Length: 143
Image (tube, rainbow, N blue to C red):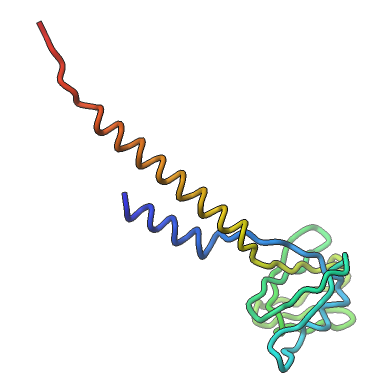
């Protein structure tokens, strides 16, 4: 049981983080096509908030139909008619994409809350199993 709880915690910490999603105008994608000398770029979302984008930042474009395509920052090219992301084997028609892209940043407090809730649930389950184990199999008197 301890191994299961440990595995759940590890997966939660590294795979199930919570993200804040920001909408960025497609025109801002031009700033994310090549790696700047600093290794990060700054773009503005549709509300005017400045966002720092690094190589490991999650970046997406959406088709008009709603399909979400992950693209790697600084490893794609946008022309007048196409978005080419060779590392993902994408050649997407720009006219088939929505006018905004999405940038996701890890939310530390949401992720911490998620992990804390997972630990609390796991602890409650372990306590319930221990209680059930301790109270079962009691002596019974027969006449």
